[in-house]
Figure 1: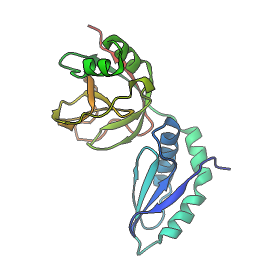
Figure 2 (figure 1 turned 120 degrees about the vertical axis):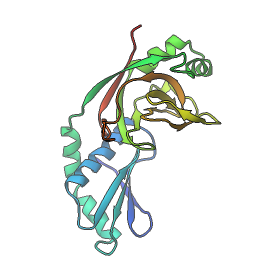
Figure 3 (figure 1 turned 90 degrees about the horizontal axis):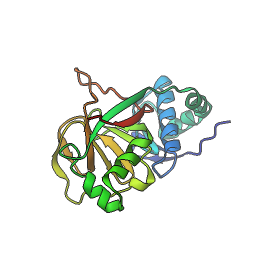
Figure 4 (figure 1 turned 135 degrees about the vertical axis):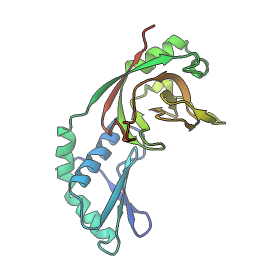
Length: 219
């Protein structure tokens, strides 16, 4: 029997939100992505797309081909497959080398002061954990990562930067991420990496469920 607790919420006439919880957590992220993979492998007639978030999956469909109630019933029938999929999934592992502080990580000192730590302690905390890609969003290839140590929880900047450099490794509000390209951003920048988040033809290198270990760059 599937272990998932889930509920549904309509989003207009052509979308449905599958809700698994209301927090950022590794467990919920894995559950969301298991549902996503199973749905993509077993689409129903009228299915358009599914968009993952930290604890929910928004499912878009053609209401002329299938009703929201029928979508709910179909998803309920997939629960056992989802449980099996989560147990059998094998992620890719990546080591991401980071140049912390200085011009590469202009907010490292600020984060240290906010938390009452030294810069070295922040780097050690940030690079000790194993992070998982919860989903991709905001920008093509931008990974929203779960696994940030609780001691590194700092708020977003009140005034976002108009431009953040590609490769910037950032944290905010219990989240972690890496900017794949130039973009505005309000997260705290701890360092920078040369890890390629996009292929030459613009496709994302990472996928949901992949694991990342940050490694301080050797001088």
